[in-house]
Length: 89
View 1 (cartoon, rainbow, N blue to C red):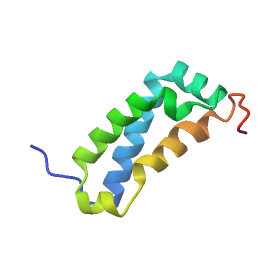
View 2: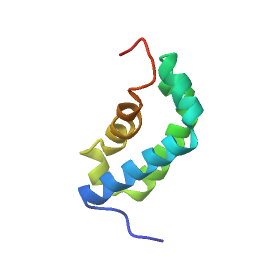
View 3: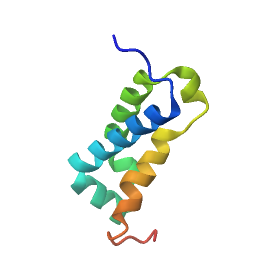
View 4: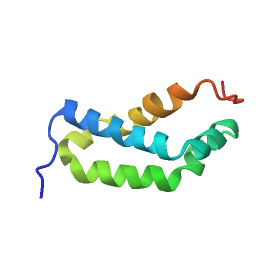
């Protein structure tokens, strides 16, 4: 079993990589979620699967004091989809 990630830089990289994969493989759902303002509902299963993977790889102490996974969802997915028409922006 691989050692747990215990540096903020590595944890942030992992979070962004997971968010990038979510974006790559779920484009239609992301578009629908942004357009209908249901992003977190439409992608709840995928987000939860990504979160479980992330939390399983990162040291618990680092998890307790950071929010890299949630920030990655916003920075990597939502911020890059500003071209999708939505009533929320």
